[in-house]
Length: 260
Image (cartoon, rainbow, N blue to C red; front, side, top):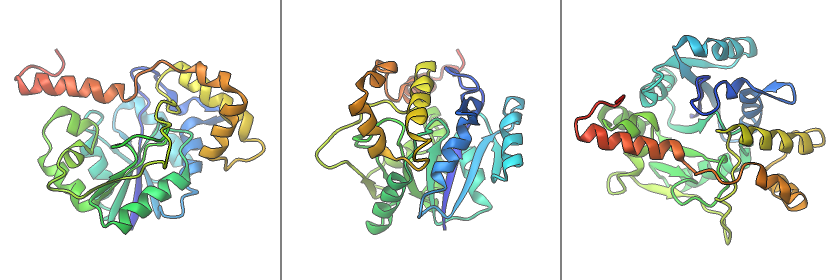
């Protein structure tokens, strides 16, 4: 069984409450789930959030909408992610994050199919980034996730779930899906800043009414026709959160306090 785990929380440091912010009258997280559910290869989906009171509104939304829900640690996301999987016993797990309302089900399926075809332990389109930031997909064997859960110690490994696996290419067979002949990784389609949210709203307003199932190619065509949209949220650093976690690793290894 292939299980998608969508990790999300309300208490974002850069844009609090973003997952519940409405895109055309619907919470952003529901817009993303609507898209993920169009995947042909994902067989089940669970939203993994924290047990913190701040995430109660997100949990209540999931309950109202009939979305499978797991609540766990806020800071130890690997523990939360593993907890979301353990009772469901999937063969493979798809990791998605709740800041990607332009997630493309075809890209999700393409990563899954490469993962299965090559019998990989871990496959993504992020190790060799050529897709727009915000179409990130990671797929791993559940057995590899279990090993990471048991053995990972660094803050970045606990917060970002998969580094323990993809930093060990001699131990795990890794795969990466790349776009052929082009690199679109400079395009920013994720939502971490107010400008990102404004950009995504513009995309939905332009494309969703005519085609609710619009995909990456439709967004690219729109950006060719309206290049000014790209400027709304350009200039931010890709993977800024992970870079901060690597700095926390240095403090951890020196024996310093992580909250210092």
